[in-house]
Image 1 (cartoon, one colour):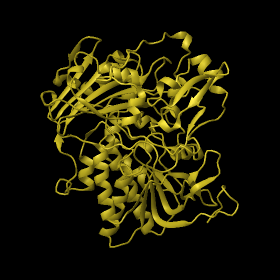
Image 2 (tube, rainbow, N blue to C red; image 1 turned 45 degrees about the vertical axis):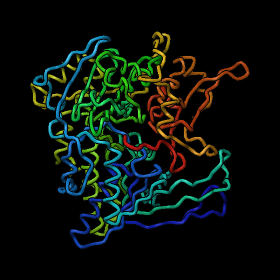
Image 3 (tube, rainbow, N blue to C red; image 1 turned 120 degrees about the vertical axis):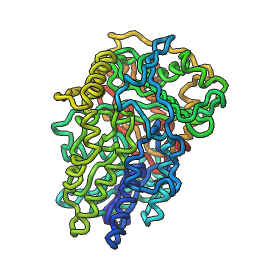
Image 4 (cartoon, rainbow, N blue to C red; image 1 turned 180 degrees about the vertical axis):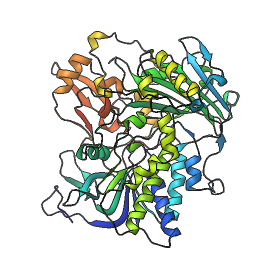
Length: 555
């Protein structure tokens, strides 16, 4: 039991578990499931808890997604019989290079293996995550949606001993409101962190234990996605389309996807590397105008937009992978950065790393160990097929950061001619926030106004993400120094946060003849772009009250 700062007499209750997992996505749920599977196979009991900040399992899950089922098959060899929602196998791959008016298709024979999707499935990752949630609960995992892990707890020796959930009902003034509910402590022998890319607590752990020492800075992309119901004649189940080129310039990393699945459903999205230089660039507006391309627009004419969302992805790969273990716990899935950017896939890596960490934790618990370093986890990863896959793709993001044409040529050389085994390693030395250049070096970009049929504005987009935060709560988008936005960001970079945010959270307004930054925290879809791209790293994203944020149905 420990004291809580809201009042001098408040004492948090505590629950004890063998294994606490922060994050109810594919990595966290797979870790919980596999821990229970392993314990059952040994006729042992293990107590496992999963905390999920979303209002329900899957509410915060957003991905393309084309899924490689390899890791899922390891977790559940009978996943088809169990009804896992992998219903649309990939039937056709297309890779297009776009100019402003033309589309040129690469012949499939020239594409490296990483761009081919035979044997994969087009899915809703939110649906798969909900299915994993039911499997976990059936095995006896305690799954707690709507509870955000807000604080890491440590032993006197400095090892992680669990987490505390955020208190509910705190007013903007920082005092308990009418519906105040004190947070709870969850103590564990081991704690696994599976928060997704740029995890709030994962970021703290990296700093406290210096987990990024000797690694390249992490590289991120912002993925913006819409789900559409299109006309039957425009629907081609199993078709996977990826593009490079327009609307992004040749020096800005990124690309798009269109995935046809289900009943007349198309998932469309654009990934923009957050290492871009031009402060006038707006990933949201680039995505909207992308849909107007002559080769893309016909898919959506006469269709209906169903959902919208955005999320950062950790794209640095193996070179940027931090040390993943520390006393008392481990980072798994995208909280560590296992996504394979060359394949635009991370869910199989999330599942695999969740399983590897669970195996290490269960073995340690069986040996009556607790709160020490799970060294078996990184060792198992280094001997796994996932390490082989990521090692083959280790140069993808560093090459693409050098520009579309050189990057494409070198990735083609490495992947096609050298089989993903080049005798060299290319490194990235700059963090994304260091890449933004002063506005004086660039021209504003003239984006077309939304037509309300194919293209849309931010606020109508946020509306269909079903994003909601309790209004009377402290803002979860915090500033180290309130003067920096106007004195630095606005003066030097023309206020880039009002463009890189895909949800209209940040806007500059005039008050008493002076500019000031207004933060509309209630719009936040938890993409983490501000925490990543802010040029002075003055914006710090912290976890809001549990249950807040987007409520995605099928993303």
